[in-house]
Length: 277
Image (tube, rainbow, N blue to C red; front, side, top):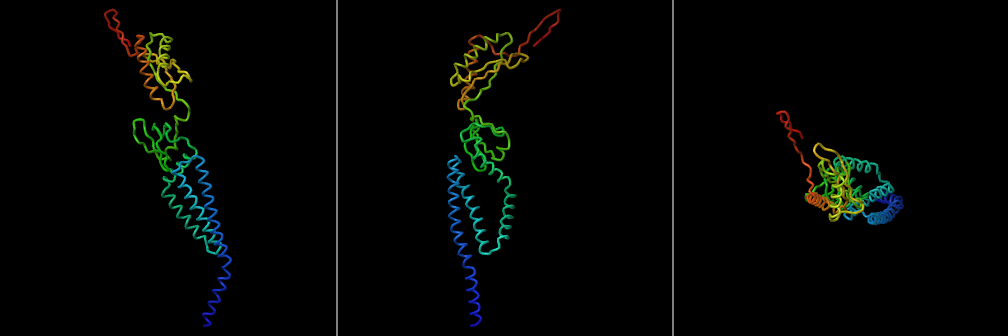
């Protein structure tokens, strides 16, 4: 009986000694959980206002919530006298192991978050990523989905997409359409220039401002290469590209001007035949 009385007395003393810490820890835990929920809600609203992808917001908020709650639990455990050093070390080692195992995947995830925050390109933009030209169909956490111009689905890991030069063709209001026309040397440039400019003006969806440009680009062995530069919106790029070529060909044919091609002249002198390009 004396042993039981002694043990019960010791337990009561321990409870009395621990009661303030335990009550304080419970209050800190309750208030801390409320603060964590409030912080995560504020972060979620801020990300929604910033235009972040709606599919990514729940993932990021839940990750932040878990991180804050782990920190809260460790703090509460320290308040009641539980040694947290071993827990922190264990969590650190587990995080290091997971990070090393998922190094590439985490890099793609980080790049995806940066794309969604800073928006170098958006869904629907015409982009060129790692040599792939097409429209962005979807921006996922780990990958960017691009629909190529030949209707192929191209999946580009975000880490790879952001590791090189990213060209966003939809970022500005208009694009320059780069075309070339070969003009024979014997033709008058001013005449051909006027014909091509008129053909461009007759092409649907060509922008009048900036004005189209037709100039000499270089002199080749068999022709003069002309730089033909109309402008269009991103959506109308290919309509202008093909339409301009079609109208220029028709206009030059109507004016009797042939597109340049390699020619050969044969000279006969003193019984010898000489051929020149």
